[in-house]
Image (cartoon, one colour):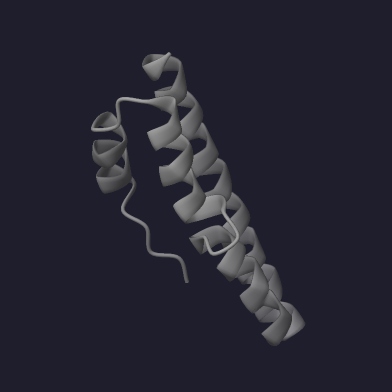
Amino acid sequence: MLNLDYAQIATELTQLTREADLNEYKAKFFGKEGVITKSYQQLRQLDSEAKAALGQEINITKQKLENLFQEYKKQLL
């Protein structure tokens, strides 16, 4: 289960002042060792029912994070 505090992430985003910082922060979630990437890797170990549930949760979380990063990127630029 992904337990991410979106309010905390949004607060941390507001502290970033450069696009490079934003990209580095985004890598914590989407990079090779990121939360989302690791979550997708966990799917391999699950049965089909659990895989479907976690996969849906990961996709929703991924979309929320992408929207959050896009919003902030617009403000930053």
